[in-house]
Length: 265
Ligand code: FPP
Image (cartoon, rainbow, N blue to C red; front, side, top):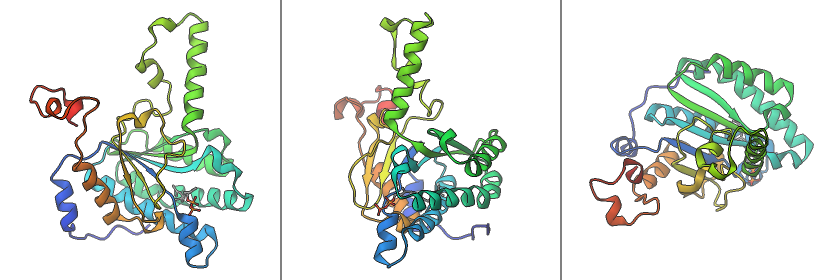
């Protein structure tokens, strides 16, 4: 892939850099199909242009210093799409894993995946596992692809795991806590999700990070995903920076000096 050109930051980027960033951003990348249909093109062209947005937003997040970026690339429910669209998306994922490999490694990004990854075809799973292993020691930013991912599926799996551990006598159901459950989610070890973005004007969560988004801020934008580039991303970050996060407390409490850091994040 070409090296990103050195460009001067826009005024918005300068402004966003001056304030605390979300540690973990999740994105529901919606509107690829509509982007293509508006241009009289096959839906797959929208997904292809959407991969360009993936590259731009990843670069911007890394440059800004976001710790974790999680992209909803393929849901558990997306398998039910027409077979040619599913096949096209799988091809695009493989192309992406091959074309972005060098940039991901060169920029200290750790590639991660969540979801029922074993359901992916081998030609996607292999480059994914290779890049996951080769980038495992990178510390710059964690880029997580949610692939064959569903929040309910993730919670069900964790519940099953907990029940089995209880049946084996390894944990006491009466003392089960949030950490017991969180440690069994695919996202274990990632920072708390601070911001969820959804593109294309839809305002729903669609089975994305259901447990993790409990206290996330939400940014809904009308931009279709292929049109969502650095400037749109910065606008969402700027919205986030303008929010007061209360985590159930009052505004007066979170503005007091002795309030725990998390409530002020
Ligand atoms: C939703 O838009 C998008 C998807 C189901 C796939 C997202 C995939 C990409 C952005 C490209 C490949 C991913 C990577 C990581 C390279 P939609 O098709 O539902 O749009 P619509 O609502 O307009 O039909």
